[in-house]
Each structure stands twice: as structure tokens, then as C-alpha cells.
Image 1: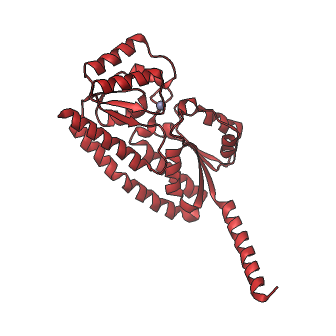
Image 2: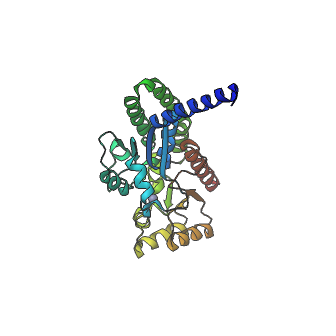
Image 3: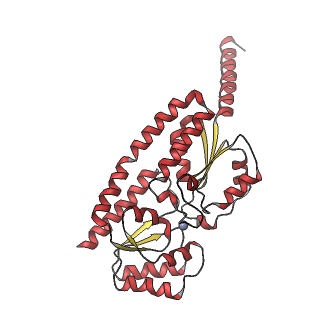
Length: 292
Ligand SMILES: [Zn+2]
């Protein structure tokens, strides 16, 4: 072996050792849902690895059951983020099954004053994502104090990136507060509240969320709202569907009521701001055209 080859081999070996050590010191974050995982990547940057459990936009998260791989991701995590308020009860079970005093957890619902029994789709509440980002920054800064400044800089940049969304919400609220709307499932509930919309048929929506049949009375009220054009928009959750939601979707279309598609999980290749902005733009378009 010539001298250059030897140097090259030693260099490769050293590089492997240093990158191996680096990988071992990365902070492992597990997020029950991908919108929290996305925030974790933004704040944690190259100092963290992130595993998001719920990320499939074609799957009903309310029916999710954890597998062995999920259990492993949770048991080896340094930080676990979950939504709480009964949205992801499997996460609590997995955390209990693998006790670790070094691991910290962020319960987004507890952090933002939401309780079990409340609408569990709390990431649609504009105050939730900033609160999770701040809690995570504090956690990361404690675990990796050498990079605390870096985490805080990323937090500031992230919070600044939310400003256009906050402004859009305020603008739509000014235009549409009080507008009667309906939805097949309560995923958009907190955002509808932030916009001041009059959300109807909530009993129907909870039944669909819980994978149970809505009462005949709730179905009739929903159908009347569509036939009488009482509601100006139907929010349709494409991830939580059954024959009843399809019936309502078709009835809305027949009666010329605009449909705004909403999802539980963040679509691939989008971040929280673009996801929410796209949905709000679609709503603005739907209500704008409904006024004419
Ligand atoms: Zn839902």
C-alpha cells in the first residue's frame, strides 16, 4: 500500500469514528404527530434526529394502533412530544411501558390548557404550535446547553415565520366572523373559533370522530343545513370518512355549497405555516365566492 492510500484510509477511519460519535450524541426526538415533528426539526436542526409516528395523510389517526417499531422509537427517545387530551392515548401507554428518568415529555394539551373531553385537535388552535416550540427550545437548551443560543435563534426565526399566518387569521376574522359553517368532523374546530365562524352540527362531528353513527336527529339537522343553504361552507376531513360523510359531501355539492378539504395530518413536503395557509386560502376563496 502506498503512502497516499494509507493516509486516505486513516482519514476515512477517523471520519467514521468522529461521525459515529456525533450520531451517538444527537438528541433523539419522537413526535406522535408529524406537525410536532416538523417543528422539532426546525428548532433542533442538525443537532437532533426526529421520528414522527402519525404522518400518513390517508390514515385515520383516531383508529391508530402502535406497533413494535413505534414502541422502540418511544423507548429510545430523549424527548417525546405528543398532543394529549386523548388524541394519542397509545403514546401514554408506550411511555409508561418504557420508564426512563432521562427522557423528557411535552404534552401539548397540558401545555395549552386543553383537557381530555375537549376537542382534541389542538394543533388547529393558533396558540398551540408556538407553545410547543417554546417548550421544546427550553428542553433542548437544558439537554444541550452548549447550543442553547442556537436553539433560541431558531425559535425566534420560527415564531417570526408564524406572523403572516396570524395576520391572515385576523383578516379572515374581520371579513367572515359570524358566518354559519359546518364540518363532517371537528378537526378544524379551533381554527373556526379563532376565525369567529358559527360552527354548526357539532354533535354529528363528534360521532364521526369517535367512529360511531350520528343520531337520526343530527343527520337530519345536517341535511337541512345543506338543503336550505344555511351554511356557507362544508369543511370535509378527508382522513376521517364513512358513508354518512360521503352523503353530506354529495349533498353539499348538489346544493352548490363550497367544500373546503381539511386534514388531521400535515401533508408531505409542507410545513405548518404553508399547510394552514393553504386551508385558509381555500376557505377565503369559498366564502368569497359564496358572497357573490
Ligand atoms: Zn379528528
